[in-house]
Image (tube, rainbow, N blue to C red; front, side):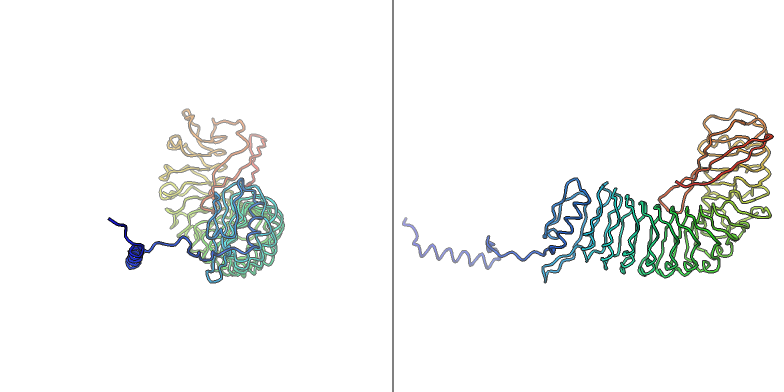
Length: 484
């Protein structure tokens, strides 16, 4: 058979391609034009390269102007871009580099990423100072530099971050004062500055932060009074300023407006004046109230115990001319989880509801008061820690005490009857000077007990330092509190 003519072959080929085109299966050309790829501007690429270099990644990520489209392979480095396909231009909008133990510094080039909305460099080991250039980031809503080793002052330029809602600088080595212009951060809702070395006073301008819900300034070196202006923060739910050097009288009048409060702690300061019972009674949403380690006067009244949502109540060192008993009945007995009323001049017997009705109670400290009578006949709750040290309790020690091997207990310095049997060795029980036949040898100088602070995820410990002096068989205790 003769071969088909060239014309016939071409005709068949054209017919074949027409058929494929009609069926939608036309082969794609290898030479089609690629759409333009959105790119980062040169200044952002340069800034990112400098930032990555100074953070000291073990393996430096490759930064290119097409990284917003092509991605980047670097463990722990998360970023997002805003890209405009019409202009083929991208801008970095979010950076998160956390939990990598990076030991470098924060390059000032971060302030040139002008579209940045979130910057998170938390839980590393970054040192050096916070760059002033961060104040250029007008769209920044979240700044998280927490849990590093940053030092020096907080730049005043951060007060120019007009879009800032969340500021987390806690757990660093920052010093100096809190910038006065922070009162201009009118969109701020959460402020965490705890565990630094900040000094000076709390700015009066904080009273203008009307959207603020959380403020934690604990564990610094702040001094001066609690500003009256903070009483304007009606959205505030968490107010923590413990372990500072705050002083002067508690601002009763204005703080009565803080009716949204759920957590309040001023522990470990020098705040004085009458115990603000009438103000606290207005905080109907409060569930954690920590006033211990100040210079308040007065007594704990039934109004405080009647707060329906209260779970943590910690008060100590009340100065009063007259001792007072605990209320014989309280409405909130089943909700309390932690109750400390140490050195408050409380007299009389231990109310029955402590053993019979406080079924949620785990921590109880009624030490250094004037309690009389016996211990509760039983405890319905599963106690973790319990102290009745330094009272005038008497009578036999109930047998349930010697069966509570999981509870840390302190019954020292009381007048209980002689112990008629051996104390089980597995108990975490301090019986020093509790009874006629108890040990009179000095115990360990430090007694530790757990204390749950108002932050949900943190369990803190107070240290009770006992300095013992003996004179005519009388023991005197001098104690102070320090927070770790």
